[in-house]
Amino acid sequence: HRGSRRGTWEEKKYEDGVKWMSLEHNGPYFPPEYQPLPDDVSFYYNGKKVKLSLAAEEVALFFAQMLDHEYTTKQVFRENFFKDWRKEMTAEERSLIQHLEKCDFGELHNLHKAKVEARKNMSKEEKQALKEANQKITDEYGYCLLDRHKERIGNFKIEPPGLFRGRGEHPKQGMLKKRVQPEDVIINCSKDSRIPVPPAGHRWKEVRHDNTVTWLASWTENVQGSIKYIMLNANSKLKGEKDWEKYEVARKLKSCVDDIRDQYLRDLKSKEMVTRQRAVALYFIDKLALRAGNEKEEGETADTVGCCSLRVEHITLHDQLDGNECVVEFDFLGKDSIRYYNKVPVIKKSVLSLWFSGDGPFCLSLQTSLLNKHLSSLMPGLTAKVFRTYNASITLQQQLKALTNQSDNEAEKLLSYNRANRAVAILCNHQRAPPKTFEQSMATLQTKIEARKEQLALAKTELKQAKKEAKAKGNSDPKLQKYRCEEQLLKMEVQATDREENKQIALGTSKLNYLDPRISVAWCKNMGVPIEKIYNKTQREKFAWAIDMTEADFEF
DNA sequence: AGCGTCACTTAGTATTGCTGCA
DNA sequence: TGCAGCAATACTAAGTGACGCT
Image (cartoon, rainbow, N blue to C red):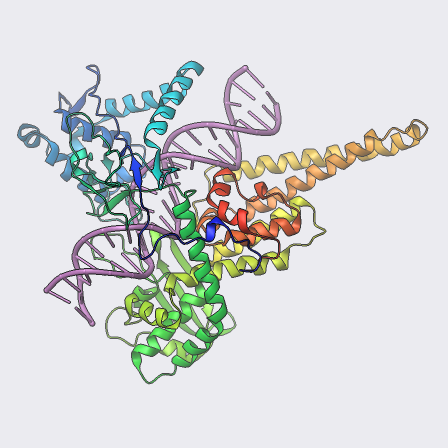
């Protein structure tokens, strides 16, 4: 453990999967019940006013609230919504309301907009009252006692009902996400703790006492049938230790990655087809930080892929492209339907010939389970995703080393840090939609820079002038002014560069999930940069373990 | 091996709230 | 002192991978 103090973070308390000895909490917070529409707001069908049943009205409002959103123009969304909405209708309503096109949600939509507007225009006192009410909810439901320590809960609120918003071309978009009842919720806590009390008139689905899991409550969501959990906040000891463990596994990979690389390069020539295919998968997972690509059930989710589920249509092989030999062109939708596009020169022609070797649509006939089984035999705890963590963290460390100089000023150092972070985000393909106000905000910043330049020029002139006059008096003010001006200008220019380079790149995901925080902490110590410049309050809480234990000589 | 289930991490976007500037 | 613009937070979907059963 070079560069780290032994301390509470390194203790391993319990054996074999036991996560806690005592757990007490107040259960999840349920969203408020539906408030019926006021009498002067109506839904119309085919031009005629229709008073909907409470259940149908609530779902109608879900749709009305989304009318400004692109979702409601999509055919799949509309069909799914309408089908599920009709299920909530009374028989009478169902026989009347047959076509979504004949529905007029205008008044409902306006009501919603008015409510949003009213919330914006609340008085200070009203806002304060609301804030206090929310605080009260957080105080009551937002914390738990785990092994006698008070810990924050990450998501203590039950997800409110609404229309399912899948990402990309999701076949289930628009379906009704039903209201969760206490009768749907499983509570997990310790036997001898104060059992959470369900809302009046209700009971829990089950109360269990399973200390091999970390969740406090769970329910099954109706759209995909998946389980949702109430879990601890990222700043909790439990999550922190797990995070630390993750990076330790990635560091262990560092010590054997050379051997593993040698082996998969050799395996490319193996007589066994499975071995060769495995080698190709590993090669790209390592080189491009691709995700594993588990199989997905067709028709249940958007059509997205990862390394092992890449299909023939996602890659193009080029003997020659842009002056390079042997290039693989990737073009596919990955997690969250984010496009991955990359042209990659590969080591050998042999790699290319290994694609398409199956007769199905897949590039490789290889399952992630097989890949991970192999990996775990090479190193305990090694799986495909460890390569992403490892390559992300090692890239940050290398980039920081290459980009930053002790002699840089703080703004320059921070730009370098962001650039190193950006290199990782690009590697991991962490994208974002360009902010709506991007062009505008760039222009504003540019204007400010111009103004500051003029001011600086003026300050310089004044300084010359003042030098002559002030020599006798010893007045240094104009000099200071010029200096400050220069510094602010530089800071803004750096900011502009940073923002431009960041247009479509999201740094947060890698910072939060892939970059060993100890690298950043050590860098801050070495560069004399306060940790607050790199991590905000939440992030410092999440990475408390790293901030606590890391010395300047830490090496990933 | 092949699956379904479960637990947990990783992900982008929507909303909220704070700050610095006119 | 109001508010634009950005940072922080909230939200919840979408992945990974372990495990147990057949």
